[in-house]
Length: 297
Image 1 (cartoon, rainbow, N blue to C red):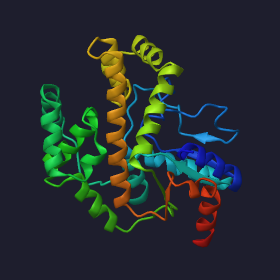
Image 2 (cartoon, rainbow, N blue to C red):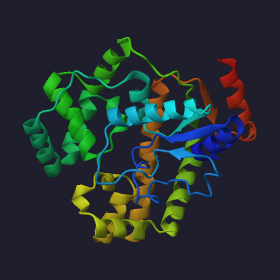
Image 3 (cartoon, rainbow, N blue to C red):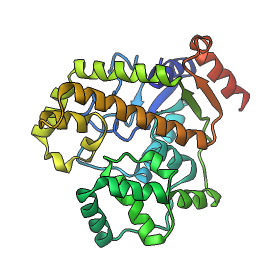
């Protein structure tokens, strides 16, 4: 049982509705590669912010946070409980602490950084790694937009994104009263699950999904295609990777990303941590969540 299934089962028990918190699941035409739950898997539970946005329309953490808050208000007005489900650490932080407002944009600096990325993305990634080892956990080397933006913020302000967030935490403002659950898993079992999921995505038609996106849109205009899975399939279609290399690359990159997510969330405050690899937890996950949630009311 993963986070999606847990969220759905929990929603059935507490009269809830699910809000997606995933930087890729929000896009339509990318159902397979982003593991969007099917209508059958959703079990009749309303899902929000999943498959609603064109992949050519980028979204910022600040905009996502505003959308989530608006959906929360709508759900609560209907006397239901909102359940936010996803692993986007930056978006979660935007909900908890807000987005720093002091940083501005500079087109010339951004363009310069974009050119540097095109020449050598590894060099830019290593620069951010030295400047902000915490924030870099959330930035995949293939995520050009986020990598460039982080370095643009530092160039303009002299302050790292992590420090901006730290300052933002101390600012008094209305905050969501979140009950946060962190799901963990044994590393080996996690990698086995990642491998199974990759195989299933390919069986479900991930390659054909990528082909359709490329036919419909200009690939360079679709930022989400830089994400794990899609980039490797494109490299395979372009002859840069064999099928076996593509599968291995997706699995490795996904494992690295999952490790980064876990590191990120462990540094944030959580109300409950559940180890999914423990058999003793498997039958008690939902009751444990409900019991802990009720105890903190």
